[in-house]
Length: 294
Ligand SMILES: C[S@@+](CC[C@H](N)C(=O)[O-])C[C@H]1O[C@@H](n2cnc3c(N)ncnc32)[C@H](O)[C@@H]1O
Ligand SMILES: [Zn+2]
Image (cartoon, rainbow, N blue to C red):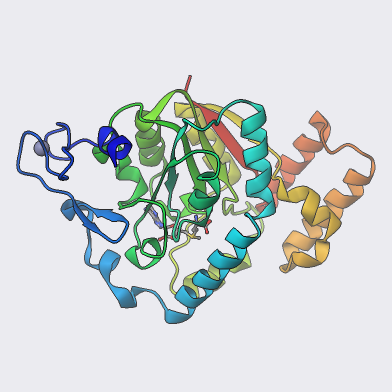
């Protein structure tokens, strides 16, 4: 509890928050339900409602969470942790914030590296299943509740595309990141210039609010605020070896082409990256973006 309190500020007057979750200056109080911290001005009626999510989605999410934690994470997340460990960007004292982390499976995996991990989301239905302390808050508002330069790592996995204004998210992330801290954007939904992702249409018809951007929009916006590096997705090896896991037709086409190029052992070369990114822009293939606050 101690560490977390030190990271918090009052969203009304910016003063410190005391152990009883009250502002030291004004009368503002943060409430708590299960593991979730709640802020009245950031609650909208959807966030707390039990029925705002289809029962089926919740059931699947619980099942997925259990499976994934048992497997100690999906392939790409394990590889990203390995990479940031190698780059000495994470250690047992690192303070980590996840954005749009839903039931917190990723935060839980990261918590094996450091105990200072916190999750955020706008859905209480998801957050309440998590074991990690969480905040019910939209990701573009994190700068209102956390103090400046609080985190070594901010991580968003497959959730950035839900935000209508990327600039706001990056501004807020930059504010809460420590100097030399990193912002990891993984498994992001990306839309192609010529081929739209059919999964997005399906998801939106089922009630999701998915508004993916083009690759260049993610990259250009992140470059406005942070020092940005692009990596090919760590899933790529996996897709190349198991193309049958890719279900939709257009992705099959991309990965078949990539597989051909990959055969020539060009995978880590500048040329291969260029080809992949060009495909990514046209067809919407994913990348891993790691930004540093310098
Ligand atoms: C596709 S899910 C990904 C969940 C999780 N990151 C994962 O990888 O399994 C997107 C999540 O983003 C959350 N979300 C949507 N808009 C958000 C916003 N503005 N701020 C924070 N979270 C948001 C949703 O509630 C949902 O849990
Ligand atoms: Zn206050």
